[in-house]
Length: 244
Image (tube, rainbow, N blue to C red; front, side, top):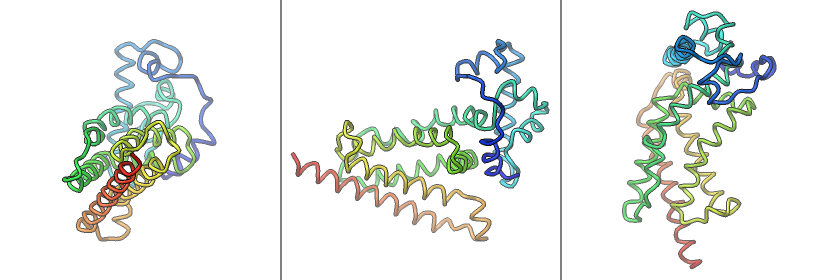
C-alpha cells in the first residue's frame, strides 16, 4: 500500500482515539503506564526505525506495520506508544521543525535592506529549499496526508507556514494585527508558491518519472521564486510608505 493510501485508510480505520499530549507521550505510554528506561528506549527505537524507512528507497511504504517490522516489534507494542501513523509522524516531525528557526526562519527576522533585497530573498529561498532537501520524504508525506484531508497534518502544515508568513508581512511593512489585509494575502500567495516550488524540485518520484533530473531548471525556479518575493516586498513597502 502506498503512503498516500495508508494515510487515507488511516482516517477511516484508525484505532479508537485515546487522549494524549506531547508531554504525556514522553512520560507515559498510551496505556497510562509511566515510561521507565526500557519504555523510553522502545519509543526511541520506534522513532529511529521510522527515520530509517524515511531515509530508504522512495518506493518502500511508510506504514505502522513497516515501522514495526523495521523496529523488530509487534504491532501491540507499537500501539502502546502511537495510536496511528499520524501521531508517529508528528513525533518524528517535532525535532525536525525545531531546526527550522536556524535553517531558514531566522533569515527573515532582521529587516532586509532595499539595496540587497534580491540577494536576501535568494538566500532565504535557497535555505528553505535546503531544509526540504534534508527532510524531503517526511515533508512530502506530511503534505500528501494533509491533501488527503488528514486534519492533524493540515494543522501542522499551516502552523509551520504561519511564522514565515508573518515575517514576510513584517518585511513588507504590513500590520501584523490585520490578518485579513491585502498584505497578508500577498504573504499567503508567496508562501504557497514557495512551498509548491520546493515540493516540485524535491520530488524524487516526479524526477524519476520524467527520467531527467534537472539541476539547472531547479536553480531557475528558485531564482524566479526569490524574484517574486523580492517584488512583493518592494511593492508593499512602497504602498506602506505612500500611506504614511
